[in-house]
Length: 225
Figure 1 (cartoon, one colour):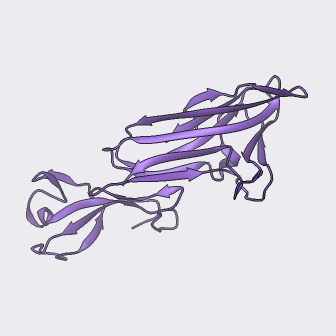
Figure 2 (tube, rainbow, N blue to C red):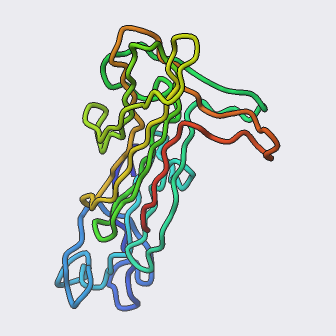
Figure 3 (tube, helix red, strand yellow):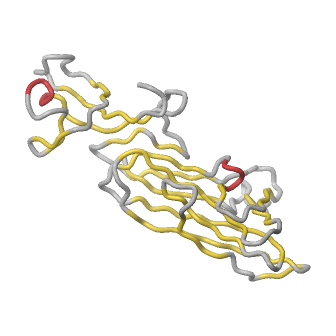
């Protein structure tokens, strides 16, 4: 399999004329047959039953981490959680980064802002994003999650709940559940600054008695496979 390539995974039965009782990856999508999905509806292909998807990463490796779920089972699917807190540092102090971009941009310069997975198009994808920020009183920051995109997002505005020395500290959250089509998909945590000022994004807070720094700006999702 090549780098960053989606493959369909099949398991053959004992009567297959090639590689009986084996597991193989193929570039060919499955076909509905006998109440299930197979490589084909006749010949040797009818002995190969579809069992899931694998997408290699850029290093041609399989990935099943907190931020990438690229091995997905078609049978016996179970819910799996993805989570990322861009810029997180468990050092018992407030961690942050800044942005002046007035167009949608990936959180933390794109480091840690992305969750990717293979959707089975059977179960809904659920996600939520949250952000804590500090900006000038004229600044309105917007939080969004790009669904296979870094330019289109569901958004929520930061609220100016507390004003300190002419600055506005606020929070925003977005989230929804949706059916995503089959194949490779990604969710990107996005932020935009509506004024030409500096917006400070807080990744995590000091522990304040907790065992680790609590995340403040993050993206999480539940997918199936």
